[in-house]
Amino acid sequence: MKIGIIVYSETGNTLLCAEKIREALTLAGGGEKGKEKGKLEVEVWLERLQVTGNPRVEKEISFPSLPDISSADALVFASPVHAFSAAPAMKKYLEQLPADALKGKKAACLVTQMFPYAWLSGNRSVGQMAALSRKKGADMRATAVINWRNKRRQEMIEEAAARVSRALL
Ligand SMILES: Cc1cc2nc3c(=O)[nH]c(=O)nc-3n(C[C@H](O)[C@H](O)[C@H](O)COP(=O)(O)O)c2cc1C
Image 1 (tube, rainbow, N blue to C red):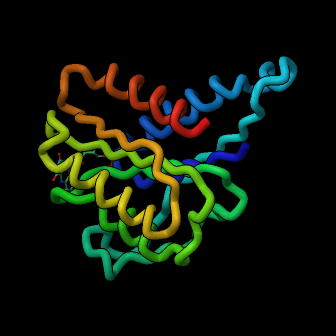
Image 2 (cartoon, rainbow, N blue to C red):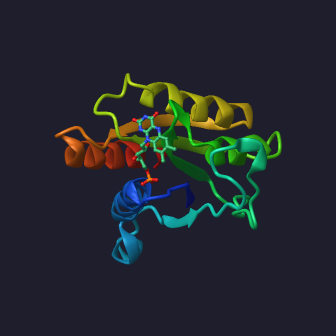
């Protein structure tokens, strides 16, 4: 099973969460040892979206290169919250995907935000990403919000990684 993690991150918070998801998926798949034991073979790759243009203005953003997601069985999309929405770069990335690009693929979405509670635009932002992914045919299995200023942040990251991993495998 091939799983791609597409992450947009400016200061590294979302990237760190994406790395945790990669670890959880790799561990659940059993890694190289798992293969020997006949466990589910999972190949996980992570790609950080690079953008040019003003990243605050969706219409000014362009992508020098785009990840090849065609062979992925499942995808994770991860983005920071910017101005009460998913980051413009992630919205633009999902919008530019061909209409059926995610057809037949399981998906999960995650956002990180500075505010301590998910109802302060985290839920809305991850909901935008889930809706855009569904529009491109995704079988949406899980969403997660990480509140960077929440004192349970570390637990939230671990719980999200475990939940995403269970939902996709
Ligand atoms: C332009 C901009 C707008 C932001 N707007 C919000 C916001 O509306 N709500 C929030 O909770 N955090 C907001 N943040 C904070 C980021 O969502 C948070 O720091 C996130 O974890 C950064 O992720 P990154 O390190 O992967 O870039 C904003 C950050 C930037 C740079």
